[in-house]
Image 1 (cartoon, rainbow, N blue to C red):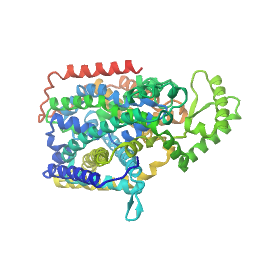
Image 2: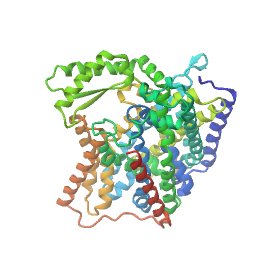
Image 3: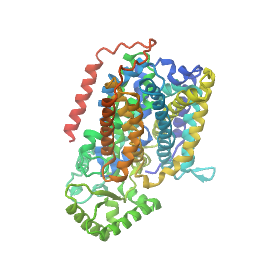
Image 4: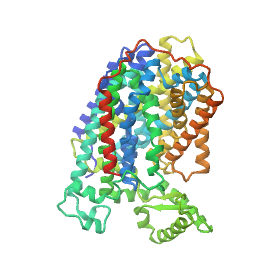
Length: 616
């Protein structure tokens, strides 16, 4: 089934898009001072917080990146990014959230100034702005543009093919429009529409994928051979799913896996989880705006509950997409000049390695590449045997030879399976997810720039109107930069959009998380420890990236975090503060915790432990 946009699809799509923009601008029409614009007047209820957190989190990088990773040999293991989040959210609800609300801060960097030193606040603010503008916002824009370009690749606009750059620009403009007008309250209320459409649309695609898998001819399914031949032709989609993907339905992968080794689940993956949900401004800003601690805690737990179900539409469809459309992914990779160039560079490295007495690099090959290069694949397999003999401890570097364009998994599902009449809604849900995340990121980036840079250093006496105007101008500037950077991320040298985002987060998240946890637990830690964590974290991670690139990046993050904590402890032992620093206490927020929230949180943790036992 080819994707064709009907009149009904267009009506549904435009109606939803108009509703999102109108609701956002209407709810944010009275946001005139900085607290109202950046924190929605600290008046958000739990149900708005919970849905808004999900809408801001699950976006195109999940639909594209996680479904793409699920289609790859990583399989279900990529779901750990989603399934470890509920546990992290439960812990954050009772640790970080009370700490921030008690201090009454606008931004996460602001807290560092109270606990450590103004330099710590400034360094984190600049680092986060760089990550947001040049990595996170740009990556979300690119992956969303890729969805739209794939769906509309045969459509004409004013006689021209719809380009990736055009799709990226449209999404950024929509997000910037209502953020500029209404700030955080506009984002939160628009998220109610976009979050609902996201969940319904995602489950609709998952249901359609299972239905089609159950009807597809066996000879068209991947993997082929004996596995498919053993299937009952009348088997349901669910039965076929578990049979075809049994090698991919594991959450614990070997230690040598370059993407998700089991060691990352025990150590490294917790660092981006706690950083993302507890210290990432565009996520935490929703909870900082909560009406009370109890409302914030209930909102965070609601987000954790919804997140337990998210792999059904951000991971499972990717597995099915490979079963159904591996041929299309292979053809796309063969036609992609950039993938060809990357594979050629890997082959040149292999040729150089074969001459070494003790080769150090394993060259992994997917089925798509092996099928087109049988003779070379056999030679590489012999080379890999030599590497395993010389490095029996599994410390070899890993290079990938790719024959599938895995990031097409979700766009192909939508293009091939979604029937006419639903396409407009599905497309609206996808666009809503992208726009929601972009809006949250733009609003948070403008908050940090305005409150941590502009107000502190440029115009300390700025009026409320000047602060709001500055925030709006920064939204425009960041949007223009994202439109310029996003199309360049199509280069496969980045290793896939999801991996690209997580890899660069490693330079900031270990040090930032160490600064907050150590400062919270060790009351007499001197200011220099916080500055060291923020400066030393990126330095240590960068050194590990250069000298130990064979270690998976999640494990490098864990090592970085541990080293920073140890060195902070050494500094504190040498020169502790004579008295603990007194943090500010806000009297404007009710800090009474939610009744029953701890029991509900314990239930969430128990469910996730059970999931990991089932898919171990």
